[in-house]
Amino acid sequence: MGTSNTSVSLAWQPPINSLSTHYVVRYRTIEGSEWTELNPTNQTVAVVEQLEAGERYIIQVRSVSHDVESFSPQEVEQIIPPNPVRGIEHHLDSQNITFEWPRPEGRIDYYTILWWNDLTPDEKVLNVCVCVCVCVCVCVCVCVCVRVHILLPSYTLM
Image 1: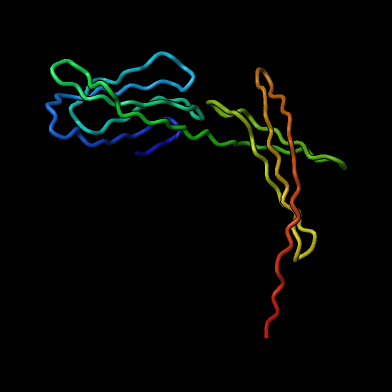
Image 2: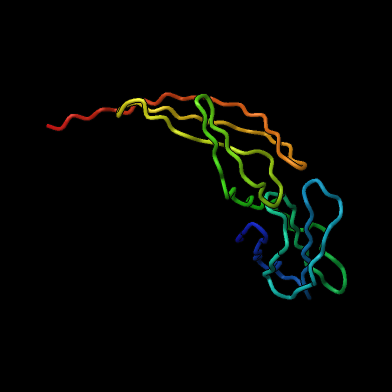
């Protein structure tokens, strides 16, 4: 199975000793109730396209024989990768740094921001912020940040 930020490629094995004439592929978001159905196929591969980046989907495949669908579908849950953040601008003053970027298309649950401080050659600080944002016309974010001090081992050459 292959995934991009807008599609999922599926492949499956045909049922053993089955008289299947074709397969039906359906999908929906994990929170949705309406299934979208692809055109029936007699192949054991399919591509589900035009998916929303960052969204979670349930995808199912059923075999069909004499216009009767199999009772239990093969089902998979797939998260479509979110679109990357691009066009980051920063504004720096004596106390703060502020980042701005256009909101990527698709579903976004949160942003993770990482940066390093070099204290000494043997000591670094990893800063991690997880930001939950609500975006209407502009995004308003609430962030929780932690700092982790990392001591690097020093090596002596002999």
